[in-house]
Image 1: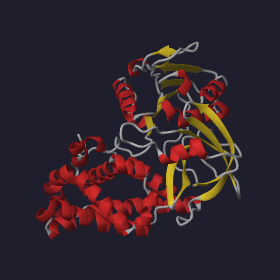
Image 2: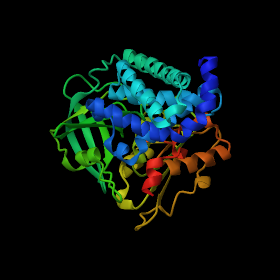
Image 3: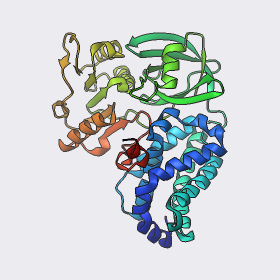
Image 4: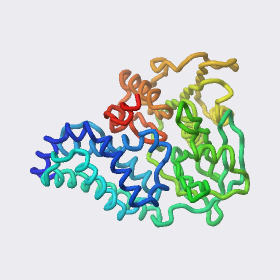
Length: 408
């Protein structure tokens, strides 16, 4: 709990911090990486270049400050869980929070200048450490529960299979070089560490696109094509273009909290693009262990040639006693049973007592979630997975970004 004195100070300074927090986060990353260049390998260079990374950090800090002062409505339990799972998959260690805290408070002072009195700095330092301690506790529990050494979260796995799934999308089968496939749940992801040469190592999270129960793990990766001045995704390009059977990549233990519930009610699985990956794993698992459970699947794709894992979904959907599938293509020749145009959220069926799982671009998921809520589905039964920096959960999308404004 935030001390009473700090709470008063944080409430008074929240508007100023919120207005400058993205600039603060940008300055934080700049100074931290200059002093600790080894940390660059833990962060997505593409997200850093686009500004998503600084907005994600800014959103989380502001949301937690609002939570502590009773002025916000962001569900911090889910935010902490998402961040902790990602940190465990990357091997974030408690001592790194000290480095982050020092540079973050220094950035606050630098950006806000004389407005940051010792009292203000102390109050925001308290906010940071309350957040950090909560994350450290969640991550420590996870490390201990799963027997993970945070200094060695990644192990070499061999690529034993490669399938061209669709345009720009490749599935890779990964086998451990020692031990077996770790226990995991449908909907989880692994961190894949790629050595890109020249001392550049980058880590990305990829959802497991098959259910548990196999002697390999499968990831399905879509190559990220750059738009405008943005370059192609480095790791997705490496995995889809360069990696071949027999190569080794670093793989973490599975993590992630968007996992299948244990209920028996209907499932509504809604995806778009490569967001089909967790949906494919969920569907396969239900077909194997609860084939009597009704499933409604809705998928949106630009065109048929980009539809990854279509055969996987059809195969396992056919094993269910009740399976309704709708596929919407925005363009191209439509295969039998497909629908032309975009997914209309209000047309997605909502059976009583249904649970929904969403994965795709954030605007798509937001529209679907809004529709489900409006039609009576409780928020606790709507689960979603955000690929990349999570700007949605904390409301970081709405934060002003001076760097992007200047670019416009």
